[in-house]
Image 1 (cartoon, one colour):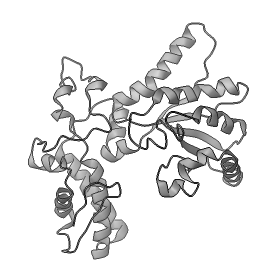
Image 2 (image 1 turned 30 degrees about the vertical axis):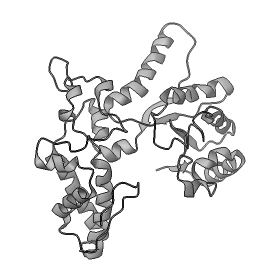
Image 3 (image 1 turned 90 degrees about the horizontal axis):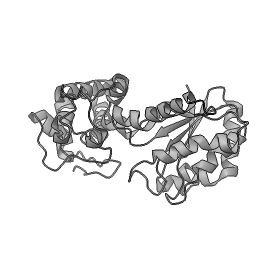
Image 4 (image 1 turned 180 degrees about the horizontal axis):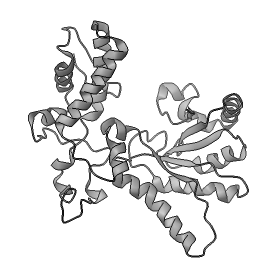
Length: 309
């Protein structure tokens, strides 16, 4: 178990109260919080931050060495989302900057043990993980083997995944097995069945439990529809071909912020339904698992996608 101090939340309601990403700008308060937490808890404590408040003025490279310099033994890692607060979830995560931050500690505080850095942002396939995390590790190993001074590399081989796991719950399997999984619609539907079963076990199978399960299922579906099956990507013809050894160029794969084209058809009716960005179609999927919705049922996704009334 561990406790995470989240300085990455960009939501206005949170930042206006001095919490979330705005806490990055309040170093004195942040030090008080981390000192109190690490002084009481015996489990590891992590700190999640962004590159800064404004993308043009990143501050993580100076903030992380300050946290390192505070000498708090309970700080186990710093997780860095490669976007600023104002960027929220738009634009591409800046992994070059994350790597810069990971090296900055040994430059500013060479006598202090570095805090492990865990990168976050746009890890959507195993090739993303290899390109952004593992390739950097291999480059450093080669440098060390060339009789150059040892390079302290606090960038962890772990990566933090968020939306990638919401859109592709099987992403950890892809990373572990180093493959692009062309998962079928029936396999994905089995996952939804398991999700529904867990919900009914937790909230109960009465009407209130069904309603709660359905709402969480619909929130889940509002992310799941964004996934375009690898087998439908014409640009990724090498992904399963024997001639390519099953390797697909990362530049040809669907990226995190890309959505399925409008009216895209799948390889069967279920896959087509799962590709729909219409909330009414998410309702249909929920009815296949939980029965018809009440006549007065309404649903508005928290991230402001299409609603249902």
